[in-house]
Amino acid sequence: MRSQTNSRYRRPSQAPPPDLLTVLSKKVVGQDAALEALVPYVHMYQAGLAPEGRPVGVFLLLGPTGTGKTKTVEALADAIHGSEKNVLRIDCGEFQMEHEVAKLIGAPPGYLGHRETVPMLNQQKLNAVTSEKSNLSIVLFDEIEKAAGSMNRLLLGVLDKAILRLGDNSIVNFERSLIFLTSNLGARGISRELRPDFGFDSLVQRERPKRHRKLESIALNAVKRKFSPEFVNRVDVISTYHPLDRQALERILEHQVEELRRHIRARLGSRAFSVELTLRAKEFLLGKGTSVEYGARELRRTVHRHLIQPLAGELTRGNLEPAGCAMVDWDGEAAQLDFDCISEEELDVAS
Image 1 (cartoon, rainbow, N blue to C red):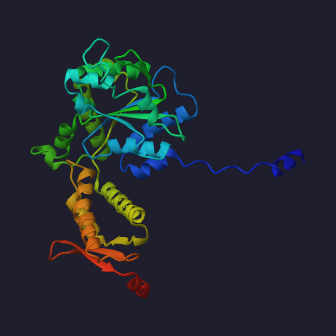
Image 2 (cartoon, helix red, strand yellow):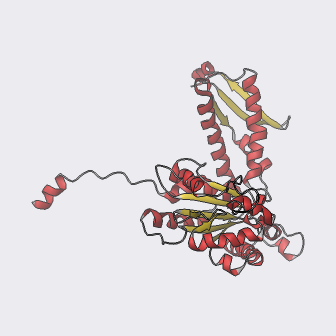
Image 3 (cartoon, helix red, strand yellow):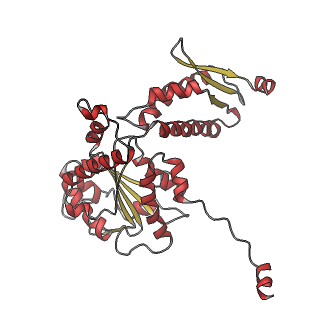
C-alpha cells in the first residue's frame, strides 16, 4: 500500500533534454565519428566529472576545407549557449610571424607599447562567450598550422595546465573550456588519395572503411611532421573529417534551403514568402556545387549565386508578393534556374 501511495503523489517527470549528439548531427552532416568522440567530454563537464587543472577537452580537427570542422564548433556553441557566436575564435593566420604573438598575450612591462597593447586572449573575453545556460567556454584556434612556432609553444601550457600567462603577468584560466584546433594538414595528400592521376589506384575504388583509415593515416602523419610530440600528446582527440559524399551534400542542401526559408520569415515578417524547389532544381544546385576540393563551401556559394541572388532580384522587381510562393525549376534551354512567382490568391485556387 505504501508504494502505491507514494507513486500516486510522485511528481511528474520532466521531459529529458534533447540528446546532444542528435542535435549536432542535424547541423553537421557526414561526420558522425568526430561528433561521437566530442560529446562525452561535454557530458563529463555537465556531470561535474571533468578533470581539474586542465581544459575540459582539447580537440584537433583535421581534413579538407568545407567538410564541417568550423561548423562543428559553431553547432556546439549553438547547442550549449543558444548562439553560434558564443565562440572565442583566434585566427592563427594572424600570428605567422614570431613578433605577432605579442598581440595574443600583450607586451610585457618595460616593452614599447605595453600599456597600449590589449591582449586578444584574456579572462574577460573568455568569460564573455559563456551564457546563462552554461559557463563552459568554447575556444577555437583556426588553422593552427599557420601559427608561428612560439605560439605553439605558448599553447603547451594551456593544453596541459589550462593556464595562460599574459604579458602583464596576469593569468587566463581555461579549466572550464573546450579548446578546438582546426587544420588543413594532409588535405593535399587526401585529395591525391581520392583522385589519383594515374596508375592502378586510379582504376580501383577502395572500400569505405579502408579508405577512411587511409585518409586518417595521411592526416595524422602530416600532424606528426608539423608538431612536436609534446604538443600532439596534449591533444585529447584527433578527428579526421572526410570529404562529403553525394548523400551528405543532399542533406546539406536541404538544410541550406530550410535556413533560407527561416531567414526570409525572420527578416521580411509580414512580407515573407515561401520557396519551393523541384527535384530538377536541386539536381542542378548539387551538380554545380559538388566539389571534392572545396566541399560544402562550394555548395553554399552555388546556392547564394544561383538561388538567393535571383530571388532577391525577383523581390526588388516586385514579382514576389507577401504570402506568395517562389517555385524554382530548372530551365534546360536557358541552362539556369527558372523562377515562377505565384501569388497568395493563385495558391488558394490551386489548393
